[in-house]
Length: 237
Image (tube, rainbow, N blue to C red):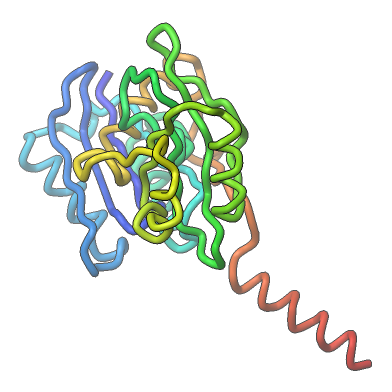
């Protein structure tokens, strides 16, 4: 199965082409440019450099959130556009699941954390068992203090990764059971989205492009600000 993977849910933009167990090509950029500037050129370069006939792509896998609201929508629009134009199925891959999938077959707990600002992170806890990654918790939007509390309750070594690590590393380093993934696997990678997307597609979870849905764990900043403004106006009446 040949899968095009896309992830624009965080600070990193990434696109990859994976065929069965072979990574054909991957481009990842975590530097200043917006995802709207980078993701389409990345995909075009992958297709051109690998001499891939777009019709030979069997499935599109797209990171579906949680994450940046703007990034989520850019990735979704790109993935849906390809899926509908090529008449190919699209599989939604939870961003946190794909991040955790960067770490393979460890006996330790894995906890990807994405910076959600306001001292919050998007997070979930995972472990590997008999060659399969299991999610131990729901996807969460919680304070970093709450995530640390959950991790300490587990009483096991926990590997942290994601763009929330540099933001909260000082707190995390206070626990000697907390470890940090190295640079080659601590951020979003479209190859992980594609690889996990293949697993989900084989489980029958691929859908048509117009059925693709994003995962939002909290309201956007604009929605929150609007609600706060309306609440203040109501108080002043």
